[in-house]
Image (cartoon, rainbow, N blue to C red; front, side, top):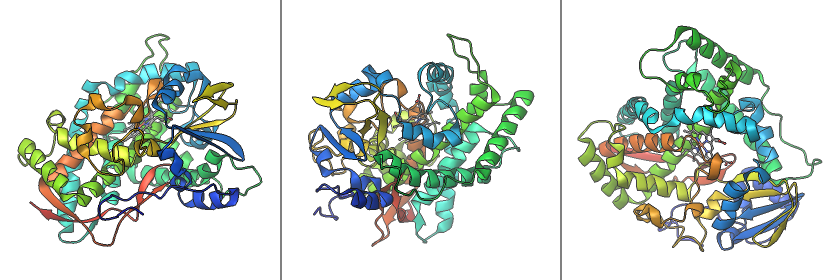
Length: 451
Ligand code: HEM
């Protein structure tokens, strides 16, 4: 048993082979609890739970899957079935030529310059978060809830800024419901349980989803007629986007699906990264003090700006370490198309090949004392094995929003740490639970003292 006082919270992984019903029961609560403990000590683990599956933790083999054999290992059928009702054949789930042209058209949207131009929106959201913490006074605040609010403000403002056709709260509600429902289904499908096992509920009625899509469509149409003033937001940039090879541009439906993709893929993941970072700096007050000293020196009382980000290396290391220990996307999965051999094991077409990013970050073959919180690991980034650290995936399908998310996380975390000392509420430890994303269940409860 790990000592809870000296090690941040973790999920006890499975140490014995379970029957199908036990796995089912456990997975319904927490996908992480079905990752075998072996996955933290071995390069590859295979099994059969209805369907054949493999978990790969060997960096060189992961590179084969994500980079060298991209077309043999497309995103899993599960991922696609799950997300298609919400985000159509968008960038996140399309394959082959249909994925390629969208990726080329969207790439400039996330250029360094464009992401930097959007930083004032992030700074303003950080400022409002600090104000809400101040308003709570001595009362404890759930920093998970706070970070979800803050990142949704950011993504709402950078996708459909300045429009009155877009109801932020409504879209937020619809997306949260969708993620909760989709998560329940995915547990079964990820594991490939046979069809006779009853699935919980149906995906949400579709009404909220339809409403959300038509709201987005009106916002897009209004914008293409009216144009936009000021700094171009993600919608303006995508409206201008064109595949340099085919000259193809996105239709209203394609624009809408991709913007909703940015919201679905970018909002909760960034919120969770921030919530876990807050948990960790609450866990280790020395790290928090050092981070605060850095932030105060650079920010001098201001909210962090895009330009400040490069001067806050220690804050960034905390975020990198939070992403290693609690990667928001805890598992990525692919469906094998061809007979193949990975790590000397046979792969058959139709096998599910998973990269359990959570177990990769905790693998003893790859990390020193993997359960310890040590932001310093990221001091020399060149020393990190690229395919051992994959919070954003890698290869051509690497997260398109990674630099956007990291900039946002540094801006929000540094602004908060420069102004408050956060102390965790005794007896309220979050539990890492993965449904679609890896969440601190129970919340990250902290009190904040102005400094
Ligand atoms: C800390 C925050 C984030 C994390 C941990 C994260 C993680 C990931 C991961 C692991 C993938 C690869 C999935 C796979 O290969 O199966 C991915 C893809 C993607 N992410 Fe993110 N993401 C984050 C933020 C964002 C943001 C802010 C946006 C957009 C605004 C975004 C948009 C996307 C898109 C569109 C893809 C699909 C790219 C493609 O297939 O070409 N993500 N993300």
